Image (cartoon, rainbow, N blue to C red):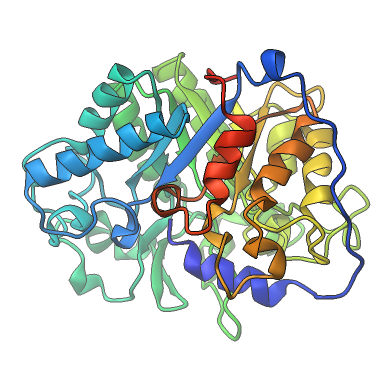
Length: 407
C-alpha cells in the first residue's frame, strides 16, 4: 500500500500529550451481528509487499502464490480480500490505458503471461470470498525519474499531468483531464470483471513533506476561480472525483460497491467542533480528503478508516475514534468497517499495548458495542500469515468462530 511514508508522517504529526482511556464494551450478540460482517485483509502489491513475493516469478509461480493467499483467507475465517491492482498508475490486468505493473515481471509494461485480476475474481468466487479491487488513484511512482517508467506510460506522454513531490511522482488531481483519465482507467476493470467492490486507499493529494511544495500553481490559476483558497479548491477536486467515480461505477456495474479506506482522523476537535478528540494529522487539511462528508452525504457504499492506534493512545485513542466514526455513520447509507493495524502487533518499535497479543481482540470487543461498525479489515496479508505474537489467532479464537458473510 505504500503506507510506510504515511506511517512515518502520522507518527511525526501525533502529539504525545493527553490522557489515556481504557476499553469497556459488552460483546455483541454473536449469532446476530457476527453472522454478517466484513472480515477482510489487504493484499498489497506495491513494492512487492505481499504479492508477488518478488518480481520475475513465472506466471505459474505467481498464480500459485495468489491462490495461496486466497486459501489463507479462507483458513483464517475471513470473507474478503482487497487486492491492490493499480499500485503505481499501472495495472495487474490487461489494461488498454496503462502498462502492466512492474511488480509482476520486474519491467513495467512487460506482459506477465496471465491475468492476475481476472484470476483473483474467479478463484475468490470459487472459495466463497469477496474480491475488492484496490486502486491508488494519483500515485505514479515512488521515484522521481520519468525515464524509469514504461515508454508508453501516460505520465511520459503527458508530462504536464505530473507533479514531482517528496522524491515521488503524482498525477495532479487539479486537472480535469487527469481526473477523467484516472476514472477511465479504473472503469476499464469494472467493465471487464464482476468486482465485488472498487476500493481506494488513503492517498489523494500526497501527505505533506516538510519544506516542500506541491506545485499546482498553473492548475490553480486555470481552475481555482470562485474558491476561497487553494485548500478549498483541492478538496473540491477530490470531492468531484469521488462523487463522479461513485456514479460511474454504479452506472457501469450496479452490483459493484465503492469503498474508501482513508486516514483515521478527519479533523481534530481543536480545529473543528465536529472533529474527534484527537491530536493527529487530519485528512481534511493534509490530503484534502473530506472523508466525513463522503459518509454523511452517502456517496460511498462503505468506508474503512485506518484506526491504526491502540486503545488508550494519547493522541489518537482507538476507544475514542471508533465511536466518533460510528456517530458519523449513524443514519447514513455508508457502511462502516474499521481498518486494523495488524502490522503493529509484536513490533518492538510500537507502544507497549502492541506487545499484548490481546490488543486487536480488544478492538473488536469494543466495536461490538457499536451497531454502526459492520466489520474490520486487517493490514496486511503478510502479517495474517506470520502472526508474530498470535494477535490474529486471538482475534479468530475470540470473534471468528462462526462463519460470517459480508454485512
